[in-house]
Image 1 (cartoon, rainbow, N blue to C red):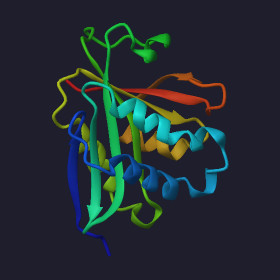
Image 2 (cartoon, rainbow, N blue to C red):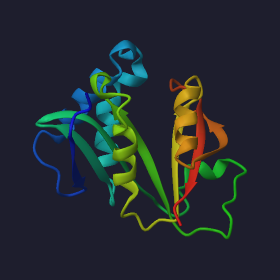
Image 3 (cartoon, rainbow, N blue to C red):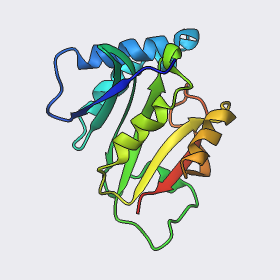
Length: 174
């Protein structure tokens, strides 16, 4: 049975008390089998980093009052587009990039289309011309999912010494 999932939008400068802990709790559940990795234990730092960026946006799905998952990201500053280290050049140029930092759904709510709803809601009001995200190269099914959402792999990066190797994926939002 599919639950009715309500989406709530949050923005930089207007985050409620307990917001960070909500995301940390969802992450801990979603990555329960990999929390022994030091990289995954740094997730609270990533929440602070991203949520303090101008333009930060987050969409959280709720089954009644139970959080099911979230998607968040922020615009990249011109000249700081980390995906530029790939050889990819968008058609007709671009002026702005939105980085999708996280899309995750808790195990009990997976395979219901929630991730796609969260992702679509996150990007629905963006004015940037390009979306970019990273996918662990050891998760080809996740990469295929993003490809079904019109992303294309344009290279690979390992942004931190203890992070996985990621596929760099981009999507034209125009």
